[in-house]
Image (cartoon, rainbow, N blue to C red; front, side):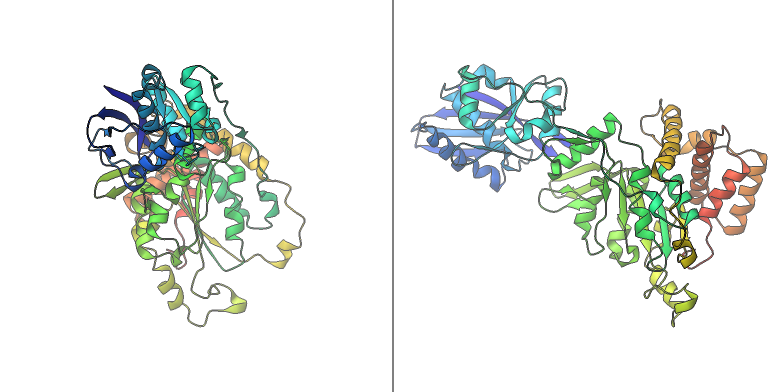
Length: 504
């Protein structure tokens, strides 16, 4: 007789169904696990043996074979412990095989039978709902998995409680979702004195998700401005929160099973490796690009990143996803982020400060910023020079307008875009527009078209640059509630695109 339990194997954010088959047969006593298991899965036999022994259950003196089907799909992780134990207990008639067959299970077993939380409970719950099965998981994963509707989530603390649940001795009540994080103290834009042009550019970037590059002397406020960007972004929609939480679930970043409606803000150090930014390493985990999905990826000291790391940004910026290629699999992670980059104008940073002029100018700046390739720089919709803040600005009272007022305008512009792209699920904001839709939605008036043609010829805009100017102009028009892109909107968009310093 062969008994079956069900679990999942993770391929990126997708949870692939896996059937755990258990067969007891005559022969020399053994415990074998087949079906492309990795080291952690192969070691499950010892954890399962010890956990069952802790319950007073001895393995039979027979040949035990566990097959993880499909056999050609790599199996990684310790979450296969619980489904293997369920299939074995069903084969020994300790728990009903029919009940096990209607359950998707995942969880790691400790030697005393306690269930240890594992990564990926949220995508596993989605897979269980699609298969019309319930989900059995460790107690620590229950609040996270319970956010998925359409499936019953049973969160157990130990293998003993699982056995008592399936036999009806002590049924476990379904898990309840964790807390929703909707508020957090975020730095306020009112803290920024001066830099009015930069604050306006951040508002435009937030409204249409336009990538932003800031170049300025040390202490001019680049990092301060970037860290106030989450405070003016609208909260995640329900669908966006689920998408983002699935990635964070695989990375183990969901705290106490709660789901956040706040947009992620990731700021990796410039010494981060390619695998840390793109994804990869052991288990091909999501990188900073994907962890910033639907949020902000802030890369300070941008030219200091290794050149190969910077170049990996080019394709994800265009496509909105990243493929982590491995010898046995290609894993795809979504990564629609708002990239904010900050850089000094030269190695010493004082190139544009008249009081502390760089002795190696202008070659110092050319050499330093040339670490950013032209194709990558062309992908930034907004480029800003951030001048030093004068003492007179610092001595002024705090600005009356804070993040709340800016966030209200950004939210109104986002609502316009949500209605605009209701029939195109691949596009959510103006930064996603392309093709004929871009030409229709961002078509300028006659004066604006003339200005754009003149600017394109004079400053040598690339085709990508031309289209990105249209996207930014459309966002500026949305912030003002204008139906058509007009000359002032294009003039402001061009001012963000055309710079006169070494960044050009």
